[in-house]
Length: 279
Picture 1 (cartoon, rainbow, N blue to C red):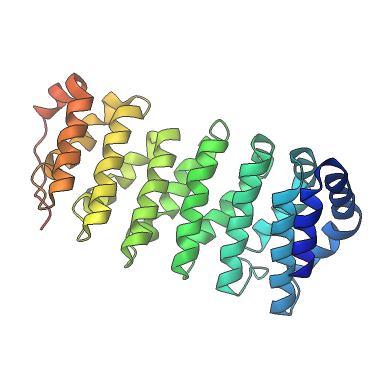
Picture 2: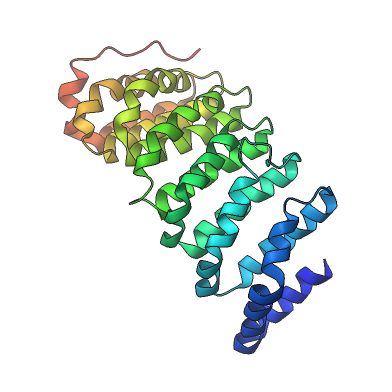
């Protein structure tokens, strides 16, 4: 805690403090902290992770980018499905957040480490800890935005790995998974044919929050997906189904979405049959 406070103090001292922090990180802190992420003592791992996160929030972008080769593989390895994986669920959650910090602060250069991060995401989607599942989904959305031009080769595999989260017992996990799935489909629509049935189930989910997320997601896909005309007949029934949803806000969302889509769905609407409304 005192070390983290010292980091904040250095970062607030403008240029001089930032230079001191950068030098301290590169020369004294980085290697031992990253080594401690795999320490057998949980408290040591927890403190090392907290301090690493605090430093990465404070460092200037060029220093963070120069550290990617060290930090990204080390964090991703602790989230893999191998024997090196972090056993404590709260620390796996913090490791996913750490990767989110790298994405936000480093940007495009992180794309070099997408294979390792994609493996960490797949493990995160399958994590038994619901908060880790949600964090993995949020990270997936973030990476789809920050690394939009680089994530496409990984999208289909990541979308398939989302299937367990899309069917999770917790509605908030299912909602987060829908958001992640849409982010991936907007980059690589080919997985829609395989995952369309699951999206249909979510559009009629028992939880209204999930149905609302699914209907909004379908509308976004119809509006923004590349070559969306080819998938209109597959997606449009979900909006038509929502027109008779028992929840007024979902019915309104479906009406508004169809109105915004306008003529692009008119022809397809004549060729599809609505699904049964949610009960």
